[in-house]
Image (cartoon, rainbow, N blue to C red):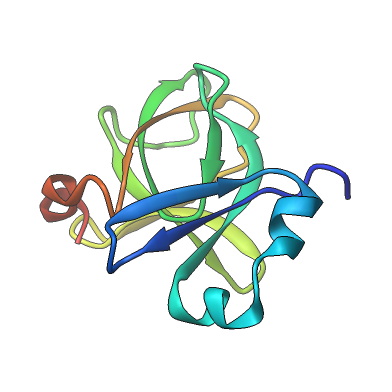
Length: 121
């Protein structure tokens, strides 16, 4: 578990903080986590080797062998019942984040890229 990573959105300051070490994670007081929005790292990277977190907005980059993900699909990463899904409520579609032949590209997140929310919610 050396690679536990989280990020925290401070809605008041409109600021994202990345915590990639146990020291940094444990340095926060419990109430700091209660006052902010905590997002887990999925341990999956996008095509640019960028970490993918819950709350990221992804676009299909490559879907080579028939997983039936529509071209140009955009969705939000959510953790539901222990599974990371890429969901688009408008299209009423959801796909597993972990698909060996599908590559994703992070194009934003639900807090810093609100202009993308109309496409997915």
